Length: 424
View (cartoon, rainbow, N blue to C red):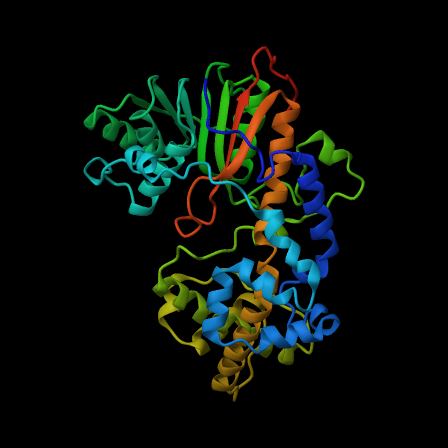
């Protein structure tokens, strides 16, 4: 089959492993900036080590904070005046666009009249993904397909049948109903993709749009183990895993003596972006975050312990109440006694000030979200290359449509046998 130009990275001469090594070294050198979480640590050590950088960040206006959080390349350039190595970020994370033909994207996107039950953003994401993986030449297997939105989008461009795997019976039934209604050559099957006896055919093209954590890693394992003809996926939610720490996949990464060790909380950092969240959701999130920080300040004083005390997810009803109600709920959950006479207004203002500080300190930490994500994705790419696949990696849509816009597209080399190994 003929694919679009297959430069794995922005520089075709650069090996994937060299890029991964550069990211590994750069992330390791800057651990002090991204490992401490400002939400739980009011004064990260880097604010003392890099006083001028911290002063510049802390002096930003709210509008500048919002701008720089949405434009990390420009923030890195600004802060490189205080820490020159931050200027290397852009070259480390730059990826090619998998398609720049808007006509192809438009033609690959289901029209709204056929996109029943498909949210507008998901419809556009599925169309962009479909455009980036054309031409399609194999039967398609949509992994963790949900209601089959991607499957139905691909079916319009695919000469072979499309099958979807999904564990939720209700989604399978609804997806099959939609496929029948629109005469799509799509069949959804109920399947737990983590089942130990699951096999996939060598002839299939496995696809996944935003399969989370262990689900997309399972696809990589299974597809390569059984020698699937092609594999195209956009990973998401890397922290949703049964292991406490990230487990490298590539043999070369496993053998690296200075490979980063990442815990689940640090994996979560890679996907902590809200560029697609409505303004109302952002405002409510900020309000609750301020309440949590206000309670954190209060509990440190009451307990006489200057440590963060985790509080579970709040019930939805609390979003409609006030700060005092939140504190009483949180105190009950964590066994903190609240004496009479607490000035809740004071601690609410404290939380708002802390949130302002956290937003600014988090700007620095957020510079490392994309590098951490690409560090993991290149591990996946190396794993597939080691198993006989030619791999492209790039972006399938603009970041404003979804921050999780990385696409890995792997084609098994002719004559390359499946690599049979035991995987979880």
